[in-house]
Each structure stands twice: as C-alpha cells, then as structure tokens.
Length: 215
Ligand SMILES: [Zn+2]
Image 1 (tube, helix red, strand yellow):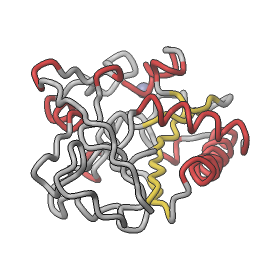
Image 2 (cartoon, helix red, strand yellow):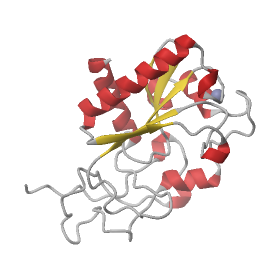
Image 3 (tube, helix red, strand yellow):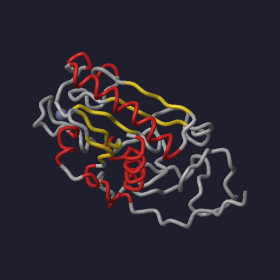
C-alpha cells in the first residue's frame, strides 16, 4: 500500500496549550496498526521518540482537571462532564444511570471511560440497576470501538483507590482501552507516556456514531 503521508502539522507552542479539548493537537499523525513503517523524513510522521509530544500528559502532570478534594463539588471531572454538551464534554453515550466518555488523557486512541452519574468511589457501591447498566455500557463500548476502529483486543478494568492507581479515585470509572497489534511500537516502554494519535473530538464523533449503530 502506498499510504499517503499525513499532511504536515505545525507544532503548537507548548505555552499556548491548555488541557481543554479544543487545544489538544495531534503532533505525530494518526496511528494505524503500527505495522507500516513511516516514510523516512516525512513531516509529522512518528520518528521513534524524537518528536514525541504529549500535551495531554503535560496537562495531567500539571495537575489541571484534578479534583481538589473527594467530594462531587470539589472539581470532580466525572460529575462535571455530563453537565456539558456531548461535544464539549467528550460524551460518547448517555444512559439512565451511567455514561461513556472519552478519557482526556488517553492511554490509546479511543480510550473510553464508563462512569456512573452518581459520585461514589467503589464498584461495590453501585446498586443493582447501576451495576447492570455499567456492565452493559462496557459491552457496548467494546462493540462501538470494534465497529469504529477495529481493535485487535482491549484492556478493561478499574483502579480502586489512589494506591491502586486511580487518578480520580473518588468517582468510579471503568477503563475500556482498545489495543492494536504493534500499537506500542514507537511508544516508550518505560514511563506512562503514550502518543495521542487522533483528535479527541474526531474520535468522540466516530464513537458516538458507532455506538448508535450497536447500542
Ligand atoms: Zn464525581
């Protein structure tokens, strides 16, 4: 296949980068299966680690969007997201008791979080109806991702408590992370940095459409 190189992109000035959706740029171009070698010297094409640039991680490290306390009114992003419209809140789908949202700090393209609307920390705090819809949304997220971007596998799970790695420990969220063969080819194997291959807004639109077809 003679894949067309992605159009050149200008690197935004880091100082101008905010953690909001609008300004999360794609510095390296989309990643497909990761199996095709990029053209040598192409502008905007990943060249191992030299141009790795992750504004989403910068924002995270800076502490933006982190709650100031454990309560729902302490800046909890999972309480705030459903109050925004779907595009601004990166909402993929809304249910009665739970919703699906794109992770603003994705481990991989299409990293979905399933959250209850209710602000609670632990999985065993969900009532029966919430548990059922939480599970159904996790399944639908898998189906929507399969339809939208044909992943080869998934990482799915929850971190319970900050000590277990939960970034927002006060509000339960289930990670649904699509995986492709070779998707870590040019990512660091140490550290937690990942390349953000798609604009989050484009990914949200794609997944919301796919969700409507499979949900
Ligand atoms: Zn919350």
